[in-house]
Amino acid sequence: MRPIKLIVGIIAFLICIFALLNLINNLQNLDRDDDGLKDKFERSMKTDPLDEDTDDDDFGDGSEYSYWFKRYKNEDDKDLKPSGDNDYDGKSNILDKDSDNDGVLDGEE
Image (tube, rainbow, N blue to C red; front, side):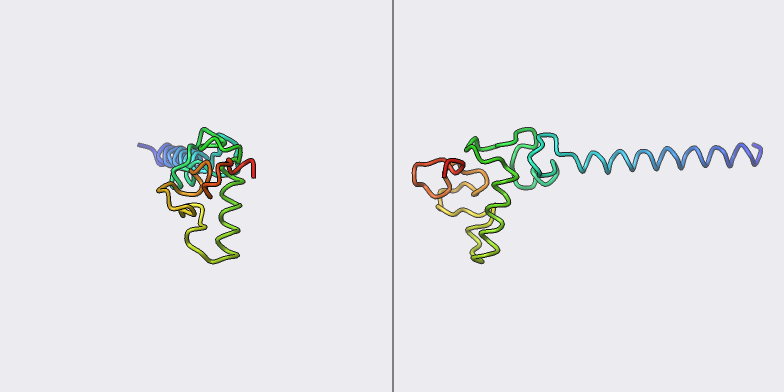
């Protein structure tokens, strides 16, 4: 094989690898439901990356995550984390329609 063809082949291979890595990076940064949380992060929080309001409480996942994260930071109580359980019913706050068990959906409070 001629050195020029070898060099062109290596360059083409490297371009393909770069394009593949770029595609993988873009897929990891998707927010398909446009709620402000990346799909990969939503999977880690057990929320649905295709549903803007996973628990149907009229409080979108991104807004709900921000709310609980701010409360946790301000009050330093692990039960107030988005993944915590404020009302001890076995559901994480971000997945609980009524996280304080007052009969009112979180999004209506």
